[in-house]
Amino acid sequence: MQLTALIIFVLTYVGIIFTRLPGINVDRPSAAFFGAVAMIVFGILDLGEAVRAIDYNTIALLLGMMIIISTLQIDGFFSLIARKTLAWSRTPQRLLVIITFVTGIASAFLVNDAVVLLFTPVIIAICRTSRLNPVPYLIAEILASNTGSAMTITGNPQNMLIGITSGIDYAIFFYKLLPVSLLGMGLIVGMVRWFYRKQFRSGTVITVEENHFHYQMNSMKFSVPIFLGVVVLFFLGKIIGLSIPVIALVGASLILIFGKVRPSEVIKNVDWVLLLFFASLFIVVEGAVKAGLMDAFIHRPVLSSDLTGIVKLHGLSLFMSQIVSNVPYTVMMLPVLKPLSGDILWLTLASASTLAGNATIIGAMANLIVIESAEKEKVTIRFWEFFKIGLVVTLLSFVISVAVLWIWL
Image (cartoon, rainbow, N blue to C red; front, side):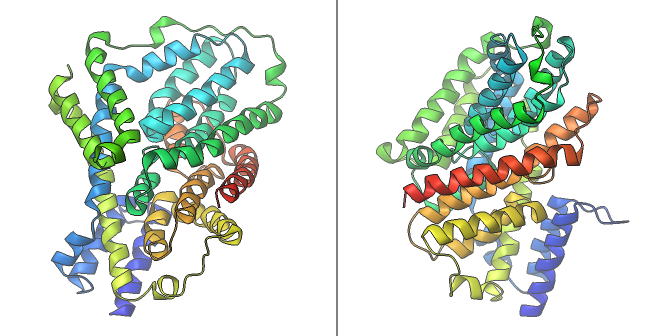
């Protein structure tokens, strides 16, 4: 059984690593789904065990946030944010600062993948109108979306996994990782200005045209207050006795009932493939745990809740996030960290796995979304151009992360 489970586990993660194998129509969700089904077919898990392996709290949180964000997206809330903030931009330097901090803070509460999907075309349009090279701003957007999303449980999928599994309070999570994100965003501004210093010496005046933004204020009168209420309740969850997934589902149900967007249109925009991907990964990893493939890590912990453990986990996250990306890596780490006491390693995993996504183009899903969206607009961000600044920002932000987490020990 152990050998069979090992083969299935390896094949699943090979499919995840390479996204598409030559001659075979395989992508990340289908590879994970194949692995989950194989774990059942070959008797590693029975159907009941596979169903119980799925963390429905995480699935519920993802579903709730997807419905809320889908509604806000259709209403044009992201366009409204872009218009209000970019209207303050008058110079290339100010535009960089605004893009970095608005993207980072929005990513903390709206899930970074959705933020960059909506912001990228707007940034490109503004740069073209002002005759600026959009690449530095898009790189800043990518780096900021990952860095900013690290500060909350709802900032990205891996943080949702960590927050639900660890049981860390939303407010405590935010309080302890807020310095990492804010200092990291300041670092991004400095590094982008340094790497593209010639561009930022220009006296270009930024122009923002109204026709780049489309939104429905009548609909947002309902959807935005519900979203803001959900964020407030996330911080008060422990006091009022509601879990984060329940709060997200309550918000999703209210926004479907009172919002002006047709519910069928909202539900159609939910990323059901991502939910399947998560459910399948839970089953694959549970099969590996049951077969004893991870006993060496679970029963003889190699990580300790001290400075050494924090540094080790940052190094492991940097390496693994480039190979399998941060979400599959995080799912794999959940059973390893569960036996350990305290919150510090959970917070370390959240910070390190998210910041590690900035090292290369393939480190995080948000990176790929920006790259693909930019390609559609005939803007190319090359691997090495991104890697030079991405690696520097990642290593320096790791120093910030380790220092902040060391203070919380």
